[in-house]
Figure (cartoon, rainbow, N blue to C red):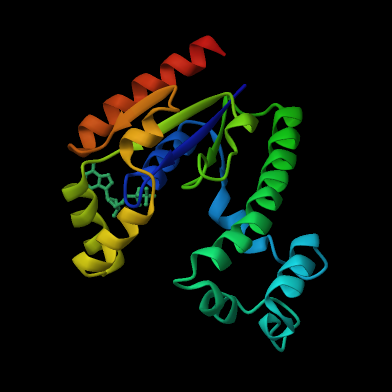
Length: 200
Ligand code: ADP
């Protein structure tokens, strides 16, 4: 069973591709979901966040209040780096543990780690192949504006804060371009899927 790291920019089509792969038997690990559990009380990351950002990030329920934490890092590059330096290695450990248990169970043809920050967070070494979804800038802007109800400026800000298609593609085993139609995407994903299944 191969382990694929699936990455791409905002509204590139990662979730759409994961859904298609899941329907064809792949097991999906969503790094965003792991990210929601990474600072649970009792974890090492929880302690580090409290030590770094102060007791006031802990809410009444004893968990990290993401809004308070978010306000501390918003627009502050150094603080954001402190936070990702805590979160990313911890999420990587969680992902690796889940990968190992799924591989051991051996019930799936393919394992996919869907992660917007796969490359930035340096998680490439826990996957066998990196699949990069690319989309042209204007299409990403249109799709994100309509999905997320954001204005153009907000979307452009997010895109500019991320790696470019070219930077991601430099790490790719497979590049899936999703600037076209649903059918074109399905054809590309289906062929990459067949290829990886027959070589694993
Ligand atoms: P990501 O998970 O990378 O943020 P999504 O898979 O959610 O991206 O796709 C972003 C948006 O674009 C969604 O609303 C999705 O339905 C839409 N979308 C994805 N691929 C296509 C396509 N080929 N044609 C039209 N819309 C698409």
